[in-house]
Length: 342
Image 1 (cartoon, helix red, strand yellow):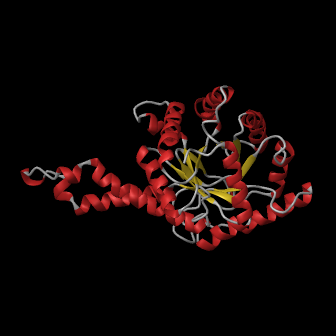
Image 2: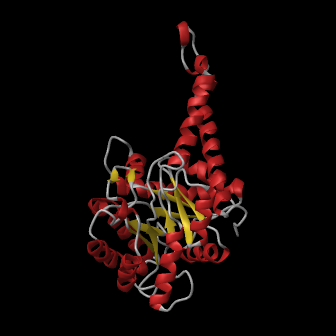
Image 3: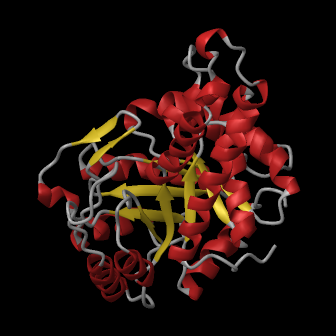
């Protein structure tokens, strides 16, 4: 299926909220990882979200150059073309964009979409994340207020982060106090006062409830997904809305239990970012292939090796299928498996 239109993406999120499930939003940094995600979503019968970070976009452009907007556009063009061959729908999203990266990542991409939309097309990306977690909340909100009208004009969605996700992802690292890892209702209230609840443009929120980027053993991270429900109730009461007025995003979920994920989804999470686990699945399978076929991928003791083994397509297919299997697992955890309307 083609990449989701803005209307289809909005319907996807609405359906997830109403149906009590969430979509996996999986980071990709190469054509192989894109293919793996499309394969996994298809095997699961799930729609989903493909996203790219600043580092992923840098890599897509070629690791010897720094041209992340170019890389992101190449990523999007590739997905727009190859997704036509798969019977599921995907949306495109740019992940974590801190303030220093606005000028060479998200803003050029919005400009590119504005030109496409002016010519009668759809935005290249269906949503963009502004990561203001490293700046004061007031500045975070001010920049979001600048971005939201531009995204509304092209029928795209803004993702904001309210609070701090610990750990590190693509060079963005937070080492704040433990209190900073838990968003408060008062914080969210300020954002709603500034951005509205859809009337000024649609936005989704990555609230923090102890989340940490990276991988940790179970028990090393103290998640409080019940906090999401408390914030939803507080905002609904303050602004007189129906239950669960916020569309939420789950960041830093590696190592989370099924119970923690289920409670987060029940409290309004419609999108869960997945990166560390799919990276490991991809690389672990490559390592296994190399160890099992070492005398084929290496020219040992003067031999010639086995071209069928060291052909990158041989281990690439194994890696893509292993990553696809982890995608399938994510759809089952989030409840999106079997939910595709494509």
